[in-house]
Image (cartoon, rainbow, N blue to C red; front, side, top):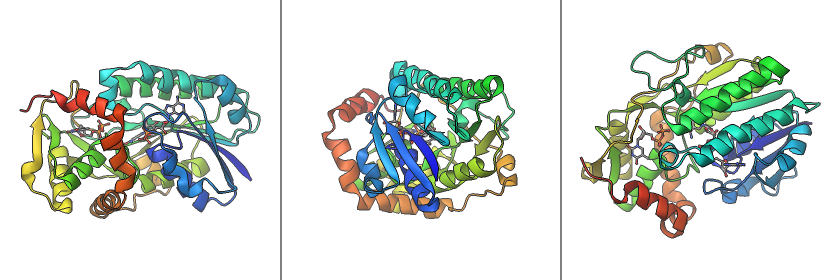
Length: 339
Ligand code: NAD
Ligand code: TYD
């Protein structure tokens, strides 16, 4: 039996990982530790709540009294929990520092004392490299984060590394590109635009729409994390990129096409401050371990649009009834000038 702690397992990637791993790894017993912030939804874990191999603990990673015993009983820690939305970090950075930096510090301190810990996977992001005008970021490249989210993730990334270098904590760091797939909170661009398209309301495209992201299907991400747990080397960083670079305006066109809506729904709006122009990852190192993305972007995007069509009961209450979501949305888009 392998005892696994997944932090942030009620969020988008974490819940996909918990579901995927319980299926793929029959010897894993998973504890999900999640604070259930606005982004953490127990319904994401509905399919595994009755599993004898899964336990849910409601708690904060920054609370050592809760987190330390859970880390200390684990063979593996997969640390997803974070504040994750760039626009929210621009509105207010405090929770990003508390969770992404201090929360990670609390888990790493616990990991120093964990007697059976085999891996501590720090889920980092391609955004720590900052904007990449050309070429692709390699794991050894300098980190130049440019917004409070990516800066707090870079802090956590390097803190985790330092606990390997200093205390021999078995840390592995993964830096994935933008994920997409089911259960992504409708603040990120794909679920926001897909649900707006389903409803026939405008899609607020920032700036000139030419910013580029590299899209990774969440299942390809899960397989990559599993592989580095099995085959990776402690103290190393692994990029995980989907190899699907696309400008936001082209992505928006595809979403509208899949939803059967007109391009006239695109609403160009004022740009995000400090908006990173492009992210791109060199994934040679992970491919040498035997990983390659398996979900073609066209198929994954079409399946994602279908998922949101078929799961309105998941997102409609958030968008229409959740007061906190509506307040965030109003602050973000309410008075945003067009371009
Ligand atoms: P998400 O916002 O959907 O979920 C985050 C989860 O963490 C939620 O369940 C939330 O309740 C939980 N959480 C937040 N603060 C917590 C705390 N203090 N204690 C315990 N739980 C807490 O995020 P996501 O998109 O699934 O991202 C997961 C991880 O992957 C993050 O570390 C993120 O930086 C990283 N990442 C995300 C992407 C992406 O495209 N979404 C890409 C690369 C890396
Ligand atoms: P997002 O999903 O917030 O991810 P990240 O900023 O972490 O890459 O945004 C993806 C891209 O979409 C990014 O270039 C910003 C852009 N975007 C819009 O144009 N409009 C929006 O309403 C949002 C949320 C994002």
